[in-house]
Amino acid sequence: MPGSAGLRRAAILLAATIPLCAAGAADAEPQPIGAAQSAYLMRCGGCHGIEGVSVPGLIPTLRGRVGALAGTAKGRDYMLHLPNVAMSRLDDATLASVLNFVVFGLGGASTAPGTPPFTAHQVHAALRDSR
Image (tube, rainbow, N blue to C red; front, side):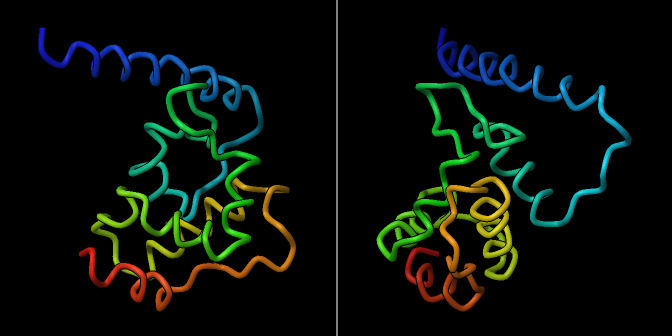
């Protein structure tokens, strides 16, 4: 049956994110989220997990790891040229804010002190030829 591997993978990802959702349900009131986190959830969270924790061995986990990439020019360039970043339909400022949410929010302690945030100008310059 065509697409059955993709459906199985989607089911595994969904099953992996349900415990993350349930874990937060027992806590206090839900907190409002910002535009960058919302865009992450809509465009990235399905694969990378709502908290940046994905299915091991299938998709890279971002939480506590991704910040290390943003500390080097090569790592930042790599992040900017990932297919779902480079081909994103988000405007440059929104895309920069999503990258910053990922690096500084999900990356946490893996982000070295002094790591500069992504800017709309940097996103535009890096991606102008791929859009």
